[in-house]
Image 1: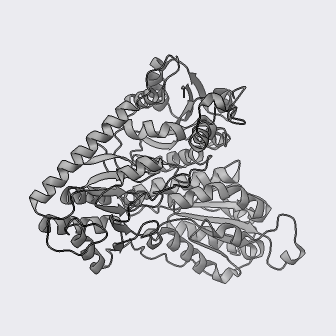
Image 2: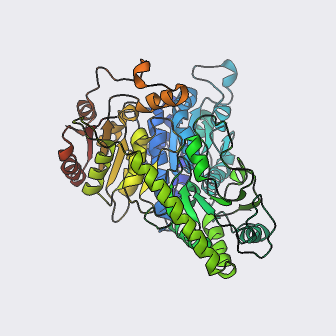
Image 3: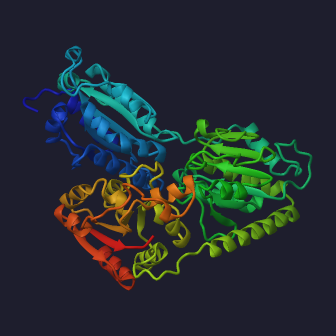
Length: 577
C-alpha cells in the first residue's frame, strides 16, 4: 500500500503469515483490491483461479491434503484460505464450498464486500454474503470494524480447525480493509482434538458389545455377546489420522467384527487387505440393508451412510443394537437410534474400546464372531464375482482395466478421485494405504479437478512429495477444464487421468434405477457428449500436456511416462460403459 500506514488488508495478511499460511487461493475483483495490493509486500503465494469455484476447490483439496501432513508434522497448519469477490463471486464458489463442507475440509473463505456505509444504495453486485454462505459453513460472519479483525480471524481459524473440521466464512468490507489500524494479530493458540468421549458412554458401548444376543440395545448380562458384530467406518476415522485407522483395526480384531466402509466413503478408513474387511456399503437399498443386517453395529466416524434416493424400508433393523462414535455430535444417532452414543475422537474411542474388549470378551466368543465374518465375506465375494462384467467385445478399456493399469504404473501415488462411475473399480481393485486416497464426498461435479491441483500444490511443499493423480471423469473434467491454467501457470506436478466414456453415465444408471426397464427404452436426453470434446487439445489450450489413449495395452506406459514428467499432464483414456 502507498505510504507507511497499516491497514486492515495489511493486518489480514500479517495474521495469515503469523498463523503459518503459505498460499491464498482466489479470483479477485474490485472489493478485493486492498488485499491484492497488500499482497505485494506479503510473504504469501497467490494462486489464481479463473473461476471462483475453481479457487474454492483448489483450496479444499489443499486443506484436506495438508490435514494428512499435519498428522505427521505439528508445524503444518492444515487450512486452505480462499478470497472471493463479493456476492456473485461467492455465489460462484458455493458449489465447491458445499463439497468442502461435506468433506470436512478446514477452509477459511473470505470475500470482499461493499463499504458498510454504502450498501443502503444497493450498488451493483450487492447481496447478503453472510446468509448466502451460512448453510455450507460452520460459522459465517462479517468483520464490521477493523479493530475486531484480529479476534474474528483467530476465531475463524479455530472454528475451521476444531473437530469436526469444516469451512468458515468472513465478509471483509472495503472500508474495513482500507481503514488504518495499529492492531496486531492475536495468537492462534492450541487446537483440541475431538476428545475421548463420555466415559460412561464408552463403558456402555463396551457392555453392549459383550451383552447377550437379544438385540435392541439389551442390558448386559455377562453372556458371551452378540454373534454378528459389524463395524461401519466413515471418513471421520481417516480425518483423525493414521493412528485412528490403526485403532479401528485394533477394535475390529478385539471385537471380532466384520468391517464395512460407509456409503459414499471417500477416504481410507480401514485397510481393505485386512482379513476382517468385507466391503464398502453400496448405495443400493437392498444390498446395504442386507450387509447391515447384524446383531450389533458400531458406526464410527460416519456421515453419508444412506442411499442416494429415498429408500422404502429401513436400512437398519429396529432389533439391531446401534453404537455411534463420532467427533461430530450431529452425526451421533442421526439416522438410527444410539444405544450407546460417544461424542469424541474416533481413534481415541475405538482404541479404548479395543482395550476393554480384549479383557472382557472371551476368546471363544471372538472366534465365533470371526467365523461369521468369514461366512459373510464369502457371500459378498461370490456376489461380486457374479456381477463382474469385465467381458466385452468393446475395443476400449473397461474401468477395471484402467484402474489396474494405473496401479501398475503408480502404486504409491496420492489419488484424488472424482471418477463417479469408475469409483467402485478404484476402491475395490487398488489396495490403498491410509492417507493415499480422497474422493468427492459431496457428490457435486466440478470438485475433483480443482482439488487435484490443490492437493498437488500441498504435496509440493513436502520434503519428499508423492506423485499426485487426479482421476476425473469426462463429465466432471468438462465442468472446470480452465483449472489446468492454474496448474500450468504454477508448473504444478500433476497427472490427470480422464476415464472417458463420452456421456454422463451416472445419470443413465440412475434413470434405470429410478424408472426400471432397459437402456433402449430411453433417449437419455442431455446425457451424451456428441460431438465429443477434444480433451487433449482442451488441456493443451490451458498450458498442460494432453494425450489420448485408445489402446488398453498402452495405458500403463502412458501413465508411467506422465507421472515421471514434471508439470501437468492430462491423459484422456477411452473406456466403455
